[in-house]
Image (cartoon, rainbow, N blue to C red; front, side):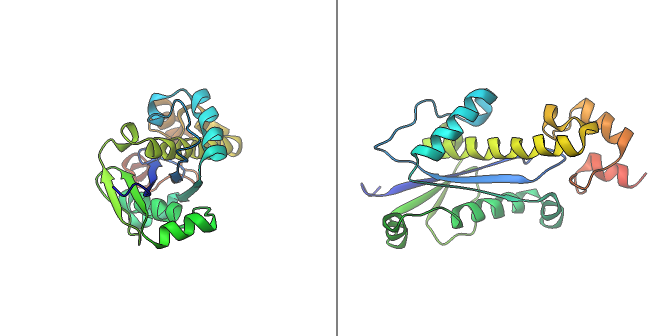
Length: 201
């Protein structure tokens, strides 16, 4: 790798839940301003994620968060929506003129967690379990997870009957029970089997 090459880490959060958007983040870390404790967001406590999210936003050279709505997920499927959210995150990075120049000259390599790359103009590499191997991807996983959780806390205020703040939209026994009891909200993913089953009733 070119010594001057920067890594833009990209990851998503929220492929499995029955409700809410899927989020993605892109992060270019600053080697001169290291962040201690970066790891796969799923292995961190919520308190630690919140702390690191603030650190990442303060210390990174650039970061961005993007999403695809439940409606978009239903229209194009969750895989394509995840890749589209990643593409949006990369393309909406807050860039300094110096960073923009590095991107123009091909000195930035995008590394994505998983086995598929979004359709972007930059060179891109997919890394399975990248969120535990590449710090920039770990940082992106944290930003995406914190942003997604924040959306579910907001949805919980609007639709307290579902318990979104507790299960974050994942198909827990309580969530499925509340779905059966209260029906579908405008933020549920209609293409997901447990939700689709209720539409047919």
